[in-house]
Amino acid sequence: MILKKPLVCLLVLFLVALTTPTWANVYASGLNKTAERSFSYILNENADTGVQLQVWQVGGGMVYSENVGAQAKGVQNWTWYGSGGVIGNSYKLKVIAADDGHAAWSQISADATPTSFYVPVGVSVYTSQNSASFGKIYVSNAAAGTTGFGRACSDGIYMLNADSSAASFTTGGITWTGGSSPWKSTVGPDGHVYVSDLSNDLVYEFSSDMTSATRLIDASNRTANQWVGGVLVSGTGANRKLYLPDTNYNDNARKGLIEYNIGTNATVAPGDTGTQVIGPTYFTFYPYDVARDSAGDWYMCQFRWDPAQAPAISKFDDSLPWPINIALWETAKVAPYNGASCIDLFEPKGWVAYGNYYTGEVQIFNMADGSYVGGFDAGSRMRDIAFDAAGNIVTVDNIAEWAKVWSPGDNANSFTTESYFTFVVPEPSSLLALLVGLPGLLVLRRRKH
Image (cartoon, rainbow, N blue to C red; front, side, top):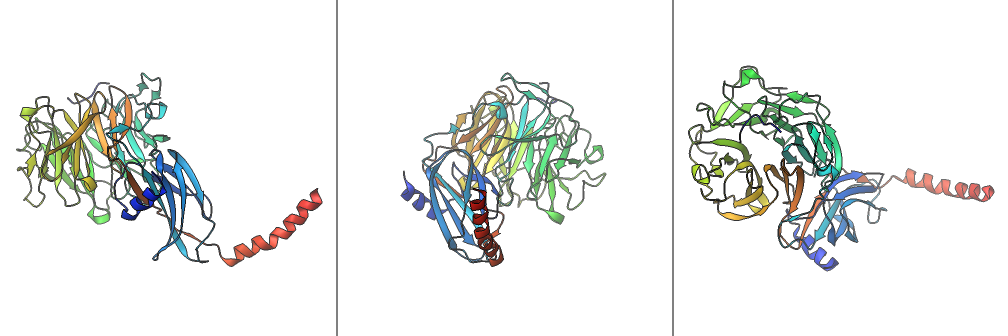
C-alpha cells in the first residue's frame, strides 16, 4: 500500500410524497424498462413505509398510481397494465420510496465481497436521474492484492449498484501503476467518469460504457512541481472545463486549483498549463480536494495533522478576481478537525463534509457559514467520501479495506425517482393481434390434450 504522496403506513407515504423532497435516506435507482410496460428498479435500502408507482403522461398529469407496500432493499419489478392510459401517448414512471429512517447516521451497506477493496482511495456517485447509471457507485482501487476479508482485487474502477451489490469492473484499458493510481474520481455533467492518477500526475476521462479511457493531460500541461490530487468537471460541450487541485504544498508557484478549458476537444491542448483559480499564497499545506456549489463558489480541504496549522475546509467566492487567495470562511482550527483528505457537498441540506485520514471520522459543516453540523465514526482512514442523490454518504477506507454507505439520521423520509425513458400504450394493431391469436391458441391447446 505504498503511496506516492503523504499524507407507519401508506397514509404517511401519501403525505410525504405530496412534498416531493429532494433528499431522503431511501431511494430507487437504476430504473430499467424490461418489457413494453414492465420495469425494474433498485432500492438502496428497505422502504419500510412503502413504495408508490406512478405513471405520468409526458407533458400532462398522472394517469395511474399503485401502492405496492413495503419493499426490501435490492431489485424490484413492476408492470403497468395500461390503466388510465391512452393508446399512442407517451408516459414516464415515477417511483416514490419512503421509509421511517434512522435516528442517527447508520451503515446500510453490508461488509461483504462486493464492498471489500485492497486499496480503496477514491469514490464518486452518479447523481443525475437522466441515465440508467443513476445511483451507481465508482470505487478507485489503487493496487492489486487480497483483502483481509479474502477478496482478490485488481487496480482499476469497481462499480457498485446503489444497494452496494456488485455491478462491474474496468481498467479502461489503462495500465495503472503506483499505489495512488487510480486516485479520486468525479462524474461530470456529461455523465462521464473522470479519474485522477496521483502517482503519475495524470487524469483520465472514461467512455460512457466505461470500457475505455482517454488521458486528458500530459507533461506539457503541468509545471515542474505540479501534483494532480483530484479532479472536478463543469459544463458540457464547448463549455466543458477541467479543474485539478495541485496538492503539492512545496509548489509555491501553483499550489491550489488549476482550470483547463477543454471544451469539445478530446484532450487538453498540448502546452496549455491552465489558469490559477485559487492559490497559491492562501494554502500553507496540502489542498487535497475540491468541490463546487451551484452558485459557482468553491470549497477546498487542506490536509494537515495539526488542526491549528490549516483549516480543514475553506470556502471561496468565485466572484472575486482570479487567483483567489481570500476565503469566505474557514472551519475552526481546533481538534478534531484535522486530516482532511477529501470533500463533498450535499446542497439540499446545505452540507459540506470531509473525511479524516487519521481517525476515519466524517465531519459535516454548514455550507453558508462553516458552522459545525455533526459527524460520525466511519472507520480507520478515510480516503474519499461522496454523497448520493438522497443525502447518504459513501466512504472508502484503505486501512479497514471497505467501501461503506451511511444513511443520515433524518427519520421519516421519501424520495421520488423519475424514469429517464418514456413508454407508450400499444397501438390497436398490437392488441388486435393478441385478441385474434387467442382463440386459435385455445383450440391448439384443446387439440393437444
